[in-house]
Image 1 (spheres, rainbow, N blue to C red):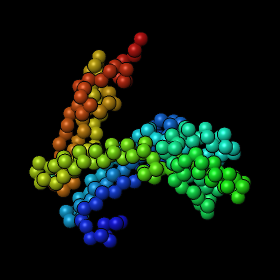
Image 2 (image 1 turned 90 degrees about the vertical axis):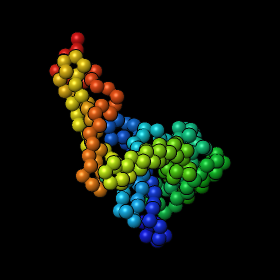
Image 3 (image 1 turned 135 degrees about the vertical axis):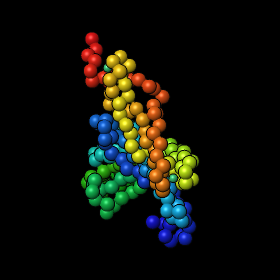
Image 4 (image 1 turned 180 degrees about the horizontal axis):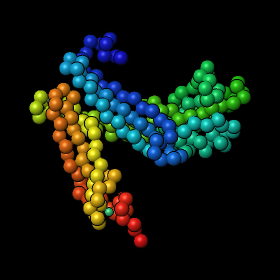
Length: 215
Ligand SMILES: [Zn+2]
Ligand SMILES: [Zn+2]
């Protein structure tokens, strides 16, 4: 990592991964991880934001018309495209394509040269404002987490290390699978704090109850 070469003891890094949403079928997602490191005090603070706000897409394209449809869906030209020979062939790859002229030019050239063109959305942050806004959210979340300081030892980055289910049903009072509390723990000392009702509700809608049959 960069931190070893520079001699600084604080670093922030970001990594995004893109693909099918883990819980929502047929929906693409952007999973952004932000890491803050303090090597002097041996502290690592990590947050993640999983967002369905993404233009992530990839497809083998046969014609200019098909390419235009793909481009519009990908929010081109404010969001750039990448072209390569085929999905797993990186021998000829053109990145950061961001004008209609360059797009047709590159497409025609690639098609003549290789007989096929694989087009994908350019997910590098500077080429992708949608990704930038998810990174902004993740950065805010990281800053908020850094500001959560342990009341015992003053270490920053108190994080949620466990969640408890069991929010009571509004109708019968029996526990549901919904979250009743978050457990915050310090990474340096034994401090731990249970925060009840993190979603600002003390009972759950009976539609999530395992015991009530709604008529
Ligand atoms: Zn119930
Ligand atoms: Zn502590």
